[in-house]
Image 1 (cartoon, rainbow, N blue to C red):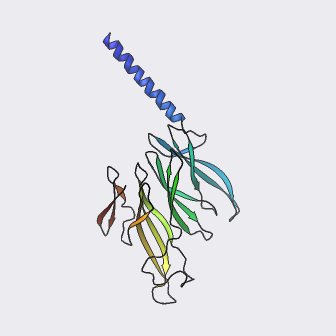
Image 2: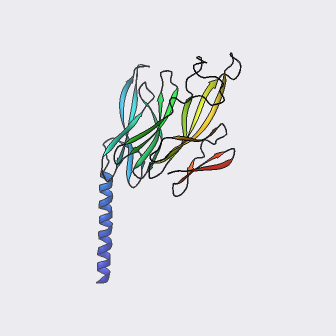
Image 3: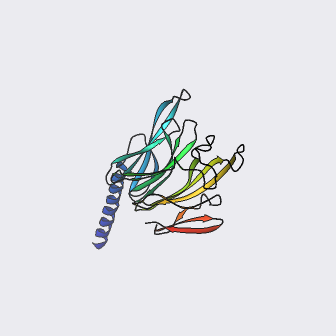
Amino acid sequence: MKLKITILMFALAIFGSAEAEARTQAACAVKGSRTVATDTGARVFRVSKEKRDPAYGRRVVLYFFYGCLYRTDRKYYLGADECLSSFGKLGHMRLAGRYVAYATSVCSPDRDTRTAVSVTDLRTGRKRVFPEFLSPPPPSVPCLPTECPALPSAPDTQVTALTLTTNGSVAWITRKVGVYRPHSPTRLEPYVLYEVRKADKSGADIVLDSGADVDPASLRLSTDGTIVYWTKRGVETSAPLQ
């Protein structure tokens, strides 16, 4: 008798688990969508749509990204992925708890790239954006953009690494490429600079470190998500996340 009860309870547990899994899979589902990132609590997916590129007169495929918590089944628009005049590219997608973080590269008319990092709360839809569109050249540049009109007002930027905690704190490394006028009025020199940045769950973004010798792929979180680490000149450095 005990054996029969045990077998029955085991069968009910399996059935209940399968039913719960089916409900989870049904939540956040959109016909024709493709999963970009997922975990036990949320899904990020994309849907595609064709659009004509006015700059080149050709048709391209746009990808529109959405995030959704399984328990609410509410979809929030994150952005579009295509380097057209009013669109950008999404990358470094990270899910942690009810939050999703990602980098958006927006193309200027000359196709240079300006980067922003966004964090969206998939429970409320609230989005925080940390743009780098107006980042100045590095401090070593001896002249301002207004004094050097031939120079770009901002460098080309790209996020190389990004981490996210379950409370919405985010850290990332940005690669900046540009040119500056060192000392000669007729000579331009290229530069590459890496910046390590963070934004705590309710704060503005701040620069933690910078330099050409920051390892662009070295960013990592501690096991409990309270410390972010990166490497500069082969030495690991850290800062708290709150």
